[in-house]
Length: 120
Length: 108
Image 1 (cartoon, rainbow over the protein chains, first blue to last red):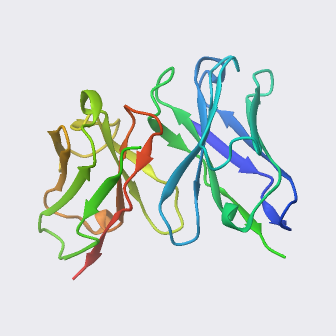
Image 2 (cartoon, helix red, strand yellow):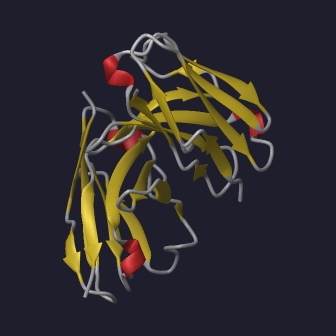
């Protein structure tokens, strides 16, 4: 069965950096795009970033553009999110999610999430 | 950016009743690229419907969707105890892909 397991969350000061990882299993990782979606405490969902199956294209929400970098290692079935210049408003649970197809922006499987807390 | 407005904010119902959730878009959603997700407390969202009305794998047929253009509806017939949750609509046809703010279906 499909499994997505995020790690790397924690508490960081404003301006700091953090790298999230998402280990995937149970499907052919090398043929699917992957996303990061976040949810601030008590709030709704916000799409953050997407990477194509081969890493050739990457897209970001305006709110994180220039500060976040998505990448993937298909040999390790893992997708990453490097976050820098973190702000208090980046505090959220970050989910990795599998794209249902190539580039549909439909999220058919989600990880359990990892909490990022930006606070001084 | 397409803004999705979900109503009502909270729906108070009893098991066995029917829930009707609305999602209105600020602009027409292309090709009915509208999805619904269910989220229970402490859990990740789960894809329920896409293409406005197509159920995802394993989703019971008491969940149904309809609509096109700017107005979409999620109907949950014969509410089961496990259906009490927050439901989000999402448009995935136009960048940036956006979510509604959610409708909570709670026990009456």
